[in-house]
Length: 295
Ligand SMILES: [Zn+2]
Image (cartoon, rainbow, N blue to C red; front, side, top):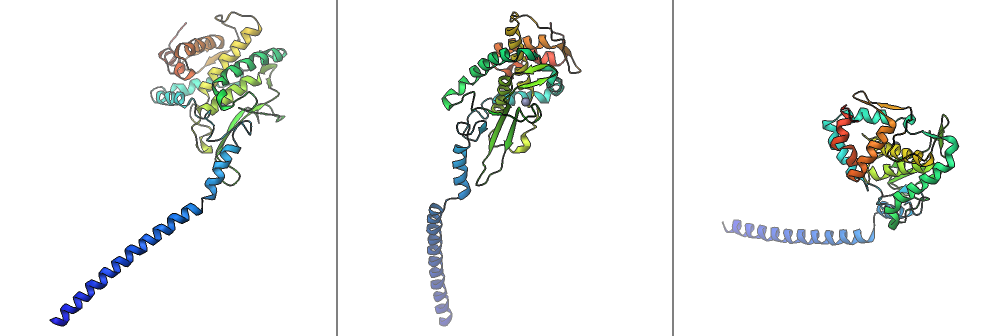
């Protein structure tokens, strides 16, 4: 019996010693790990931080990294729209009917210079809200010369490759020459306004696959139409509240309306609700899109 009792005492002793060793070992590992974390920074994270500064629009025109607060500046408007989409799937048909070159190429090509003067003024006015971030008409978008206007240019790309040379960026490019379609001209500053709106409507850090997202063109296109209508009226000295006959109708199945009427309708709603997003999801707008006759 004695022998047995001695043995168990020895055993407890060894166990306690083992636990103490174990606790000390854990402490040592933690100290070593913490010091290592300080001494060896993650190279990718370091590159990212540097690239987010070096690749932003104030250094690289048209590029917007996570540091650009123009990115997602109007994201809330997109959310309003997406919430309405569940109840109002007809918004998709309305978008498809609107997003057509014939609805935005409306200015005769011989009015190119005059239209650019007005468009530049409107674009400058729009980006004033980003003045403190260093935004100018020359750096918020990249002015490019693709020789394939309309096909390769006037776009916003999402780049999500993260490595030594790249970090997440949006790239808004606009054809510096402007674009022409069947003797009608689309001012480059209106195209820039449109592409910058895409930057404002994109959430930060989304993957490239987000590019062709749902309803991506409805707000930008409505705004583009109202801008073109405003420029057209200024060029031809037409009263702002009058309707221009563009000999063009927008037909989305549930309804059909003259383009000039539509421009006035959404301009008024935007003024009333203070944003193009709230204008599109307003009661008046949704009634129209559902096919109610409003005149
Ligand atoms: Zn677009």
